[in-house]
Length: 187
Image (cartoon, rainbow, N blue to C red; front, side, top):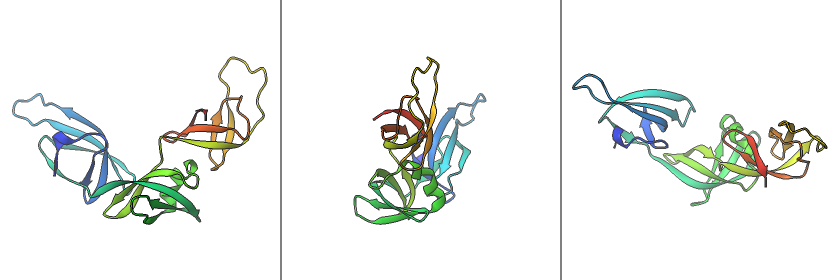
């Protein structure tokens, strides 16, 4: 059991039988005497992916979800699904197409990931915050570019398309932020 005073970002609690990760939490003191402090939370249902809001009273107790994080590895793509392996017990899991589509642009075979297991079943895959990928296709490097910030589109080895600086060429290795899919730097 977890009380509302223990709430913090990243904590996984069970709401309506589903594991939910707390995205944001705010404590609001009442203006009336004798009223309870309100705990406003924004949470993400880890099974459906929905982001919802809920308000609790101070002192409310919630069940902590049977949720574990394990080091994992992306093995290969099977059609439109991804196959992952738990590096602690070498068990393999498949992720359905809909959820796999959100992380697949950042994964190459053998990439290390964080697996989220709920009651022994894999429900989440979190790639590292930054990954290094090869540029497969882009326009030639621009000579005498002006000082204004210009970008061009590049296609990476995973099929991800993103905007990169004009000096990059095909075959270069770059760092990409997996949270918003943007170029960070050369690798």
